[in-house]
Image 1 (spheres, rainbow, N blue to C red):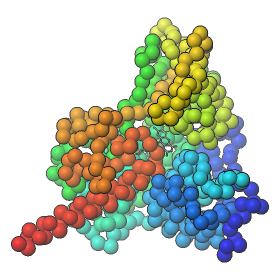
Image 2: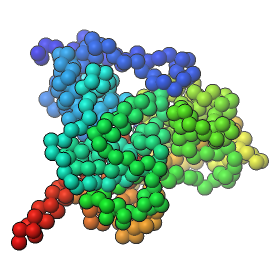
Image 3: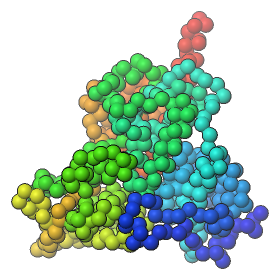
Image 4: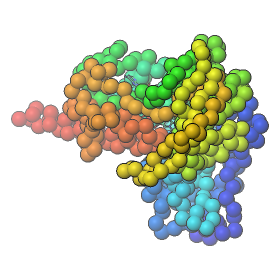
Length: 480
Ligand code: FAD
């Protein structure tokens, strides 16, 4: 079968067709079409089956990529799906939104002279096909266990852990302060990157697998962490990071300046059919406005592209470093540019001008100096280089920090790090509280969906070890 592979020499890279930018600007649908089976097989056959698969090594889930590419090239899609879903709870989600250019595809060996295999698109194709053909089934554990695990947070970390624990037969209850399941998958990431039906069908699968959800339930306010500890054999905290970073600049409190996540949540809610007063009033709606987004990560990219779709008059992204040094995916920058976003590299906000409402952002040009301890070049302001940019909506996408969880959850003994993330013992994934585990962004700081899935899976494994140990100890005591 090897002759089916190694086709990268004669077959060029081809992503699935991308809808024209002019069309994309008018709606919130995903921008790529799907592969047809023949195209997926052809693109999968470009894999060189190299001896040391760097794609797999650089995937946080160590997905068995070369093998499922080979199975796809051979038309054995059911086996390809089985293999890809063995290491990843949400391959169709990662296929859509992983920054593949920095992970698997960025490390593909053929990238050295040819363009990489389109791993993400093939992954998405395999799992979308599995859903269409009814291969994705609710979990029916071989054996039901009586122990129940409580999970705080229905984002990818909590959901991945829930699925893994159900597979082992544990009862699982998930608590979330949002009214919908998915965390940032539902309210952060826009529909044009990840259509909400994709998340909702995963929710249904978990419900059909007998995972129970307690929504609109904030742990710390509606139920205490101590109550959950008494109710469940183990508790997993997977609450993400939500405190928006700010800058101290004159005028930062002016009307018309909003945190990025408030803006994206309003847009996602509106797309899901909710009535959103701040969107209706125009407060969190870019229609007809000159929009300036500050930041260079995924959140900033999602804001600029949402603003375009809402009908903004102009959209600019202000970032203090250059294109090569931005944290967001280069692919996303390209999409944004095609859609009409203007990037203002090497520029930082100094002040926000306006009487009652913001009218301009005063910016200063930046020079990248010597690398600091982290290895990144330090941004330095160039004197007398000010430019005022017109703006009637400014979105702050400067990153996120954890909330003060020990205070919010009424659990002063819950240990945190110097960054306020939850401190865990990485071997057991347990926090400073016995039987309380943690996973995802609340442990790592703002990260990626694929890392949240990895952590959720690892945490489920450690919770199983913990509960099995407890059960064994109880048996020993009973036998004495
Ligand atoms: P979350 O997804 O944040 O879920 C945490 C859940 O916990 C939420 O549902 C929240 O309501 C709930 N919660 C919080 N506190 C409580 C409480 N006290 N009681 C009950 N429930 C609580 N990553 C990528 O890989 N690709 C991307 O393209 C990408 N784009 C992004 C775009 C944006 C705008 C943002 C903000 C992030 C993006 N990320 C992306 C990062 C990714 O979304 C996160 O790394 C990932 O969602 C973290 O998963 P999590 O389960 O740890 O937390």
